[in-house]
Length: 605
Image (cartoon, rainbow, N blue to C red; front, side, top):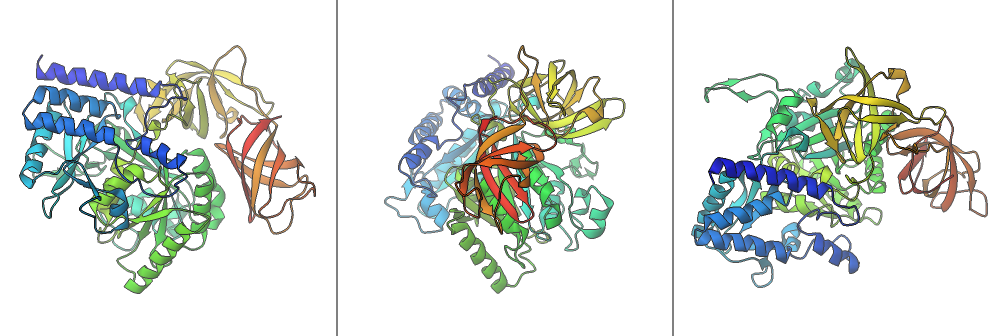
């Protein structure tokens, strides 16, 4: 078999493996990462918030088998084994050579015990270098790329960590990671995203953030008031795909042409989508909607080193914890902050993360090795990576980029997004595009959709669903023919007026029994804060997925007939304006002024 035909076969295997993993039943999901067995052990032992004690022995055995084949120069069998490793883990794999330190010692920043703190087969520095070149040769024969994430030849334990990545078979299958960026006003959210997604550093006066603003008043005030969307692509080699720098045919000449989202997607092997949310208290409703409707894989909490964790930062952290979304802390402006103030801010962040309300284990990312390992384990073990960055000098940004590059994709969560279930698409945005018609944007919660499908959208004010056809489809502004659960796509609907569609609607496939809209429902709720008491007919703004509407309390099981701060109760709600499509098990947040509550839907009435 020729090398070119072998690469084509690998691409076909990769595509089939992705389809198989996404099509598994939700009761038996594919492993989310290499530490799934350890997760089960920790949960059964009730060990919460502790770093994983060691790596999965089964995975280490597979890696050592590959290294043994490379040591005897059996490249054919090694190539097959490496192909199985990469395709079985959605096109990318973190490959470790040599003894690796335990996560507990690595994350705590402690010295590693020579007897018990290391795992893996010891290697000399010559062996590590030789095996690196062999792995690179094998992966390149498969059509992929190898990037060195971390390597050290000093000390008693030479080791290296490599990223093996195959190009995605098509633009429909490019993995995506969704991150919501929150924090208090003036904490540096838009500036940090501007530096990450555009490339050039900031000048200290807000130059990097201007390109992200969508409205004139945002440019004038420097404050975000809407949900801004930005993407950062990573190539097969692991380097950022930036929109303003495009190498020309002459390697010594750089032509500055702006790449569109579709071109970035075509050149990327992974895409990180950022939701730049508002930090001002005035726009809390918009920020809440972005967090509940966007289904983020993680929340990036920006904290200004000169101000600390103040104001809306605590609100945003509480919302992320209520939604059970993993949190990453990024302390900005370290270049302009005196050392004593930076230390006070760091201590404050650590104290809040360790508090009973958070119960997170803070991990300071001060090396590339910590960035690599924390990206794979922080969500499962209640870790909270803390980055300290400067958008002016660039300090700490390399660790942050590497962390983002290695985050597991949103589609990998097969428990939340099931392909084998019927289509359910939540509408989060609606536009009227000239010469195209009505276009909706949203996330596929389950199932799959393709161009030309006959679908139903609703409910309308009467609780009915209307029929339409998917005219065309785009993902990150690139035309696609199909989309699957977990992906964020835009659909052009045929013969539908803009006024007939609103945020919070759902799109489902046509069926003999149309879906049912709900006017009243029951939920288990916890009152986080209320300055007096809640009674019947109390009204508040409810956020439940993409649904955002005022509800009123029609009954509760509290014997006193009132609810106070800290009370738990079973409450029956009613939508004020129109019925909505909600399901049992969905999380809900409601607020009115400073009043806040959270819960879960238990029954539809």
